[in-house]
Image 1 (cartoon, rainbow, N blue to C red):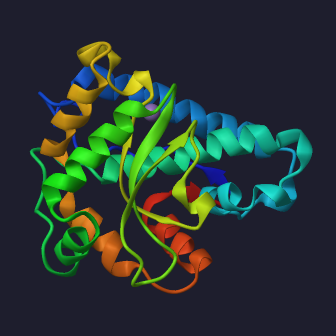
Image 2 (cartoon, rainbow, N blue to C red):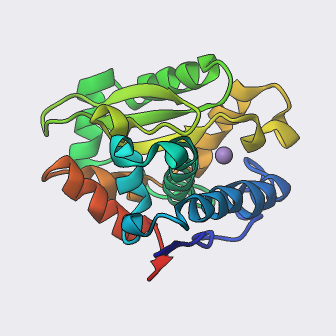
Length: 224
Ligand code: MN3
């Protein structure tokens, strides 16, 4: 299996003015592409790992040979997270939290406004490169959580399932926002694809492995 860079689901300029086209070109065509290329290069000599999805690799690092574990950790994480990220945005934003998702947000944070404030504050406070997430816990009735990860770690590595995410590596925002990460995070609310967040929330169920295998089929393209 060769891992493939998924095409953006919209044009490079489609998220303007919130995210500029030059950033999107670099971010997708250079950064994400490099994670996919390096993941394939690391896996090339390890035929026993053919057929494994990027999400499986990321969630099973203890089963990865020592000599490639760090490369798989970083690059499978980069591939999974960016694939989730592109799908979680849409030009002009799409939909809004309704129904059971809206109820879960209210129950967990008090209001959508509180969730947004907590998410922006958490993302702004990440030291160095990482991600900020809205995630579901391990049980169906668990409250939603805002959490952060460093590097390309993913909440799945802590038994959570991601609904919404934002990239706080400088490459995600520095060309347009320079050092104003909070402004970038705030502006990004205008391009959230709430229909995708809702889909992830409603599909939540089954074992952790089943959830990720479903997501892999949805998000991560590959050839065999
Ligand atoms: Mn990035």
